[in-house]
Amino acid sequence: MKIGFDIDDTLISLREYAFHHYNKILEKNVSIEQFNSLPTLYIHEPFGLSSEEGKNLWLTNAEHIFFTSCPPYEGVVDLLHKLVHNGHEIYYITSRSKEYCQKTYDWMKLNNFPIEQGRFFCGMEDHEKVDIIESLSLDYYFDDKPAVIETLTESKTKIYVKDQSYNKHLAVPRINDWQELKNIIKI
Ligand SMILES: [Mg+2]
Image (cartoon, rainbow, N blue to C red; front, side, top):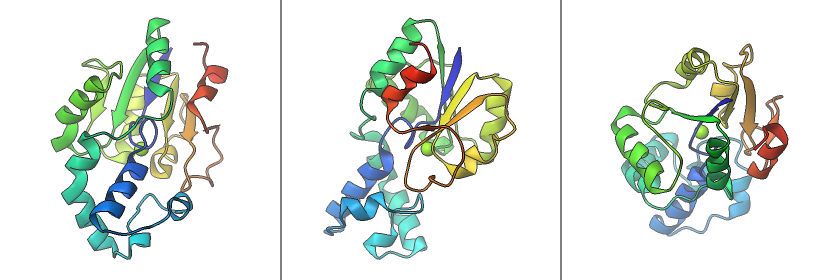
């Protein structure tokens, strides 16, 4: 099988990592409950920031958020290795901006994700992911972002959404915990 994955908030807990970082650098104490009930991808609001301030804060901290110790979701790295071991092809499709692509590839490798050149796609817009997914003829694709999932409703690829507070409205099969992957694909 050819299986594609988004990275941020699909395989790694990026927003929550950024949330803890914001609490620290802004000396705030926003609760995890507030974070977990956010209806949007953006996390600036409970910190009392405007969208412009939130955007600037994200950009100035992006290197830290992306390339330090953001944790993968529990068990997911092992599952990916098992998939590769059993002959499946793993693809990563991330819309992180082009300037971060090489460092993202290196970070994934350093953090033990099974990754290889030619199976890592980066730097596209959200709406361009669909073209890559189609051209690769993926059997499965996993993402968290409504703007991406909504472009894939006609796709032959089986689409799953990684459950997050901001995507509850999507009527698409859902992964709550990565161990559920074993019920979907023979690993
Ligand atoms: Mg994502």
